[in-house]
Length: 186
Image (cartoon, rainbow, N blue to C red; front, top):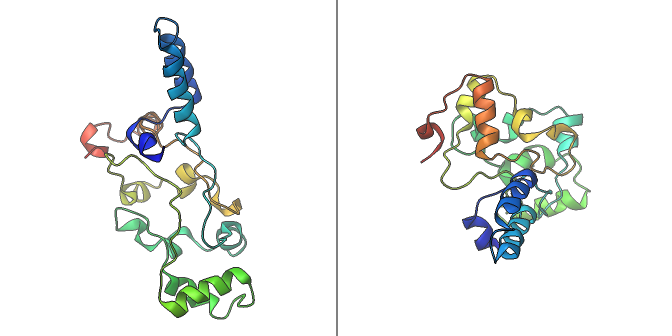
């Protein structure tokens, strides 16, 4: 099922109703088209629930209570194509002394001891044909919360915006950013 979802476009409920309503009645296989649209909606096209992570990481404690800036942990955000997740080593800078008795920190410590990375589940994803780089958005003053939501209040991070083309184009229009296809598409 994941392979099918990766090949097909992500749709919002409004898009599904428009396309499904327009195509279902005239087509003999309209129920099939409607079923595919319903599947796409359920398969994570728009705002998605938080994926299960190998270690419970509470962003509301780190980004909220401790007010650690996003860039402190996601160091590649200003220079690399992906924001990157912190290495075990980076987490251990603090957690070699902070909350060492916590079961979740002990899981982190086990990764440190065995020199194995934590395989975090990706939360925010755009299609593979999209070239998204954080740096120009940061340079333009776009706050992380614009696309990622109020992460500082989230115990588990989830995707709160669709990150679909229309969503991005709307923001580009509002901020007089380029709408040239080559800006975002590979």
